[in-house]
Length: 158
Image (cartoon, rainbow, N blue to C red; front, side):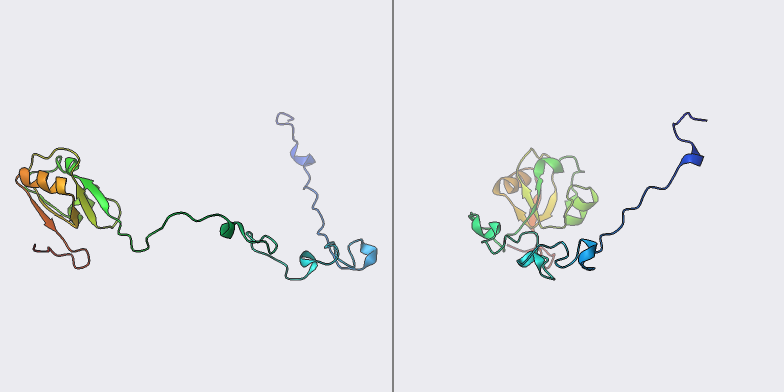
């Protein structure tokens, strides 16, 4: 019966530690200042501070030097190389919906076609931006590169 080292009938609940009751008179040992010490910000009621507070000293985030510039108007693009399009059927219309279905792109961002890889099949590619190299490769393979307006979703005639 003593295989596991414990016998069910001998088990007891663990002792519960009593909560410290502060500010209940001098005789309790936690009276007067209630364990807060004397004076200062920490002894006052409502003295909770945010984690980054440094006692009135200039906070670290304001002391460290700031470098560079983060453009708030920066446009992000989902990039697709022409080499990836080689595995699809010839003559397909490659657009946002097609690339999403084939799981080439993950995010819902404008698409930019880049010229990395080789392209031998002809496609009609509708994207929001093309690199010069990608445009040349698409047209060399006999395809068309159509620029699509992101806001409106239709083709822009150049």
